[in-house]
Length: 141
Image (cartoon, rainbow, N blue to C red):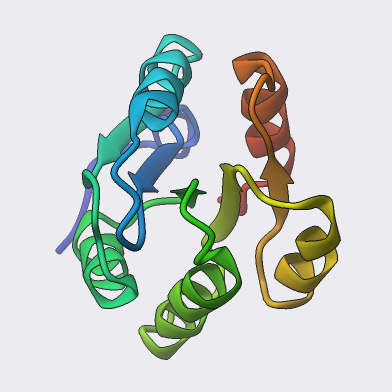
């Protein structure tokens, strides 16, 4: 399908973020605050809701074509769930998507997550601007 958009117009396309809550975590206040905060920062944000399987998140990413997938976990399944999402995205040919995470992640798990494809991790109390700046600097367009 051909597009009439000029390179300048295409360059101004907003960064698109898919925010998801993998696993059985039933607490999404922080994710919702982040969704609204990132929208205020000028991003286009799609929120999948709670209790998403890695397969559901990867399928939503395939449909939504985000530049970034943000994962939030407060229930302790992050060492399985986050890398599984990365693996499924790769299987779908979405290696260029920036995958970030947050929640109550123990500091000792952060290196493991980064080694398994999570670009960065933030915890409670992080300023939205810090995350937004990181996304702007690291997203692949």
